[in-house]
Image (cartoon, rainbow, N blue to C red; front, side):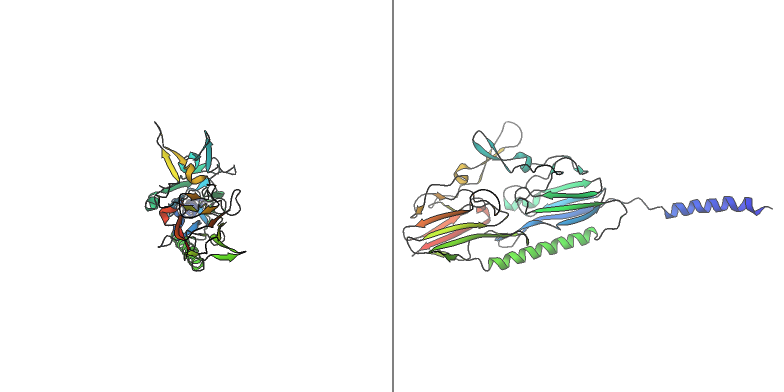
Length: 335
């Protein structure tokens, strides 16, 4: 019997089976999580970063952003970032292209994708979840438009089957560790948050750190005590946030955003002109309304300081109208 005619089909069949055995099984898409922001238990320290800052996934995987702050996640595909504020009829509004979700829930590196922002009430922030499925390998950067280029992240999408540095569970663990480190750094900075005497006046700095990823939602730890006739200057030293210095004279703190319902679609979000615009006051004796207007983040164009001379004895509470719901207030005492 010619063994050649027996072995050839047997070997061929074996090689076919080996090919089946060696072929990589189809990869099941996985879900990953990114934490957007974070808040200390007193609400005095905010983590203004995405955790982890860089995430490695496979093509076909889905990333879910969990929000722990007033943030958005926007992929612009290399195009200009939409402005946070737009003008219409002489009034300023939050841009709906930023505030509301935009684009499909898949991404191949082209087009605009935006999570939208969570509700304004801090108690409702956790309600927002944003999921995006990445369909094409590449490195995709994204940004929180609210907190500017200082708050950005990246998703690195690898071809299916390529080895990744972390599993979804490990990546989430790293995210929590990174967030905890940011909040700890902020708590340490909060312990040193005091007014500074400079040039015959007093200076209050509103603090944040881009590298460590935090902002302090307080002016000072203790009341600022000055003599009558002294000037206090507030100075922005935060790359993320906007603030105001608003003395209300015993009246309610004005809201930063005023929703304007529309006949159809979502409301227009008016920036309250009473908050946005500074008052002409250079002196303050406890009566009426004195306001800095919007003080801009460090490095952004616009006003960064506000000064006020105190002319009478009193105990004066002031607020950040943007972050009043977070308890951002300070006190000036003139004995």
